[in-house]
Length: 225
Image (cartoon, one colour):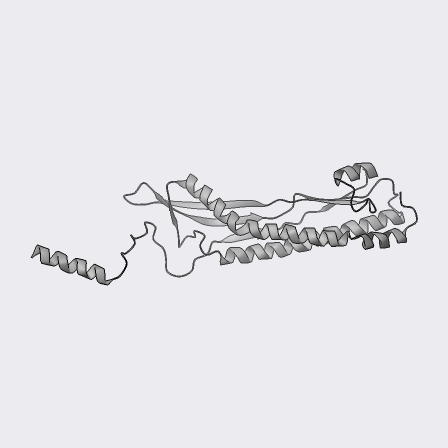
């Protein structure tokens, strides 16, 4: 009788098709789960400096711009930071733990925005005004594209339902492992979007610095140095 019962059980298992995978140690809720996140682009004031000369600004810009025709400079220090809140619970009868991203903050706020106008030009001069106006266009491009990038990061995170959320925890050895893995997971989502932003930024900034734009600016003022 024992042999017959065993044969029936094996036959039933074979009729199911492929062998069943073992149950996940960390229970998952039904339906789509997403991580709670915030994407920040805080307001950064623009500093306008007039204390450096043409030679100093050329050194800062690593070449002085397109043929040195426009002598101002805008420097934006990019920053991308993650603050990942990790939650961990113990598993009964196991040494491992269940972990998930309890909250996530992605901070895309730049570290600085500084515009340099050469000290050789009086602040009230035509040349200083044209340089400042041009550099403020560079600043506007950066701020606009950065806000668009933040929206794209929000969309990417909202779609990344594979990130471990409260309803879909991941089994890990300990909190340290969870923190390492989750930081890499978040970077996989955010970094490509941020790289696309920087590429688009470089293209638009280069278009603004096209030679014909410099030529138009040069014709507006007589006292270029």
